Length: 339
Length: 285
Image 1 (cartoon, rainbow over the protein chains, first blue to last red):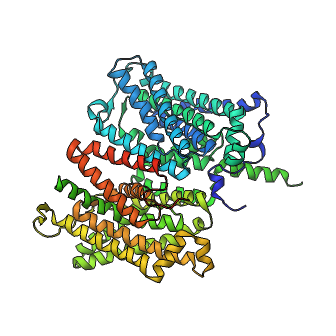
Image 2 (image 1 turned 45 degrees about the vertical axis):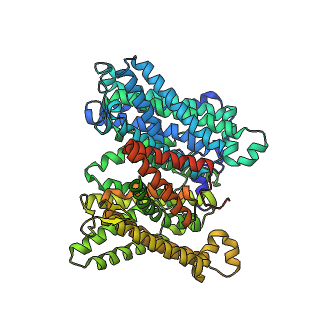
Image 3 (image 1 turned 120 degrees about the vertical axis):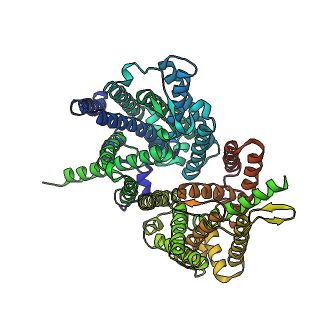
């Protein structure tokens, strides 16, 4: 089969083990727990360095973003170009509620998460109601990102504008130390992966696969396509908001570029395309690989952007389905070969 | 008030020119070219260097336009090849992702090599007065160039045989093929033309505000929004959408300040897309 992009967008059937849903809960959770356990070990050899721990925290944050976006785009084919904006709604709402309104941090994070979930749900609802395709959903959500950006700068006395927002709340807490924030965000990765895995296994997962494979057939078979799209968007957007808000309190300072389009959306899209859109572990693999690549090339400065571009080209030209599905296919072929 | 509306029309003409190239490529080829703004920026840099090298302004501009057209052709010959093999939505999506990659590569190179360069063309000496409104000479010249170009483009599309062939492909690719038109040749022509238009955008824009190396993405995004509001594939739609959005922006800027006016422009675009997903003058699919 030639490299159809349909595969990359998750519209095709992912054959073999992916399609099996009747696996036991233990077998479903084992790889998740194993991967997160490996992640737990990272501070052992990075823990001494403030710089590398900071990089690791950013890495797990992007894994969270990737899982959230994967749930929206990979599972239900809605191209949300507002990943950074949704994470930023969580982050800024959390920061403003905690610092300016004086709410407890945990309440602020929850409210930020809810705000992002509602925003994502509304966007999806509008797109579904007007039956916008992939591209138009992309454009509407891109406009949403631009509006969010101008509001961020325009409401400077609330958000700190271009200079950013220095978060006072929790400045003495464990979230500002070197290693704990890493484990908090890794915990989020674990929870998000479990939620995604359980969703895939439930009837909602069946509905996702059905509408991804053939929307019309799914609709005819009685799947309420629009409702499941909105569900996926609400859950995914809430994940983005939660990760964004948690990261804000770990970083202590957020600015428009913390959640910028070029800094978050493009990176998440590339990570996901690399790992495999619609796969469970694609975002994790993508975030690990790209965090390392980013760190390796840090001395190249602006040329890093060039390398990113070249990687995007290479990815979509040669492995449009991503590493995990391509590898899985290769392993399956090897196993099937007699002898 | 007249001055505000005038400003809006000037801005709107710029918006329209911005979207014209993008809308043709999308309408004809189902290709969403996110490297459009970068073509503009590269052309601007070419003009700048040609002028620094001592070329007369017109020669430098000619060279810039040539560079834009050439980049359109290169797109067609290289990264758009695999895109053409696909159909429908996956075609748009692959074109979007690949040209995004190209945009990043160009941006990266420019920011690395020439981070501080920018093109600003100075036209005339003082403001020019038109029916009692004083306009900067740059805006007037830019508007005249835009009007001439878009009129020329429309005449080409409406009256010449080649232009009609192009439009027939936009309306019905299969039908066009049946009457002996080769869609891939039309597509190449349109890519060269849109590269040329992107370069022209750089020139006219630089008469009003500086076109710096970082401007690529904002040019693309603006062009994309105007394109969608105007209706994919419709040059008149792009012009109409540009002028409406331009006037809305200017009035909002005069009444409530710049930052909210951008929000209003964006919301106006979003509402239009939601009410009429096919755009102001787009063809319903």
